[in-house]
Each structure stands twice: as structure tokens, then as C-alpha cells.
Length: 291
Image (cartoon, rainbow, N blue to C red; front, side):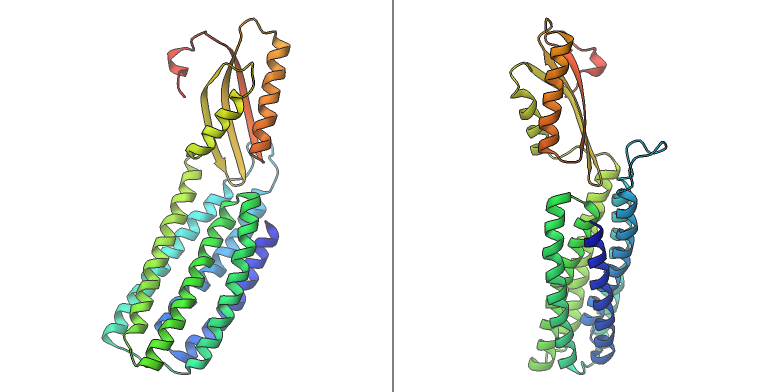
């Protein structure tokens, strides 16, 4: 994850420098929107680097569950700054409807966009592999930004072509406004995913169903209840009660529980699993009877 964060930071520095020069050369509001997006990528990549370093710190005496929530905290910051950027770009695009500015040095803008598309595309593919392996919300949020960056880059290319080749000056602010809306949409999804982790939202239904199936495929597990799940960064926390024959010895019940735990951990890497054994057919107290 650290390598992915460093790669993101390096690409961000390159794109901000290139797009800043291109904006000065072209005076395009669509280029400004793309520059704002890349500037936020630089800021959020820096936050990610710090958050991932913190999230990977082992549990200590004061943080027994680890530091995984550093990642969704970083995601909230990213969402807030992406939303602010969307508002800024939208305002600038609307102003350009009333005070249009001609585009200049289109060739420079197109060359910078080609560089941006190649760099962002390569980074997105690399981050996709990292997210598939680690399920890191910080890297996932960063990948969302760079997918957005690819879209904005293509939008800038379209804007420059429409303005310079087809003499459609309003294409520049229109595409800038579309990019602003897209940034706002990305901000909402990053904010939602991060807040779900901070609020200990349950894992998706398919993940919970998978946990239940894993437990129930053991012949001595009659049923299960009180399944509770949450995620914090790359870590997953799973708690459940399994029901077994009341005549089963304590040693055998413990062996079955260990087997269930091992299978769940194999299916959910980085999971911390807590299993309580209950005798089948004995009702739990009403306040504990939830599934």
C-alpha cells in the first residue's frame, strides 16, 4: 500500500506541474478544472501517505483494535476537498458563460492532456491491483480520484478540439461545468464509503451470507446468531455465536469453533474473528436475540 501511495504522490506532482503550465498557456476553464482536480489529487495523496502509514501501525496498549480508521478519516478529508473543488470550478465555468475567454496554444494543451491520460491510466491500473489485494479504502478513494482525472482529461481534450477546430467557444465552460458535477458525484461516493466505516456499518449482505455459509457447512454447527461485522481500513472484525449439540464436550466445541474461525479468516484476510459457542435449542436472553 505504501508503494501505491508513493506512486500516486509522484504522478500528482507531475500532473499538477504540467497542467499549471498548460492552463497558463491555453487560458482554458476546462484545463483549470482538470488542474484543480490534479491539485486535489496531490493534496489527498499526501494525506493518504500519512493515513496508510498510521493504519499499518500495529495495535498498541491504547489502540487494541489497531489504527485502521485513519484511512476512512483521510477519505472524509478527501471528500470535503473534492466537493470544494467542484464548487470552485462550477463558479468559474458559470462566469465564463458571461465573460468568455479565447483559447490559446491548443497544441500545448493537447500534449499535456496526452501525458496526463497515460500517467493517470497507468496509475489506475496499478491501484486496481492494490485494492483487489488489500481492500484499502484510502487507495480505493484515490483510485476514484484518478478515474475522475481520466474523465476530466478526456473532457479537456474534447473542449480544446470543439473550441479551436469547430469554433464553439461555449464548449469550454460547458465541459468545465460537467467536470464540476462529476467531481461532486465522486465526492459524495468517497464521503459515503468513508462515513460507513467510521460509523461501523455492517459488511455487505453478500459478505454476511458468505460468513453464515462458511459456519454452517461444519456438520456440528446447528445454527448461528448474533452475527456482527464491521470494517476499519484494511481490517475486518467479525463476531458471531454458533450453536452446537448441548452434549458436545467443551474440548470438541472449542475445536469446532477454531475450525470455523480458520475458514472465515481464509475467506476474509486481515479479519479478526470472535466466536461464542452456545448449546443448540437453548434460547438466548431476549436482549441478545438478534441476527
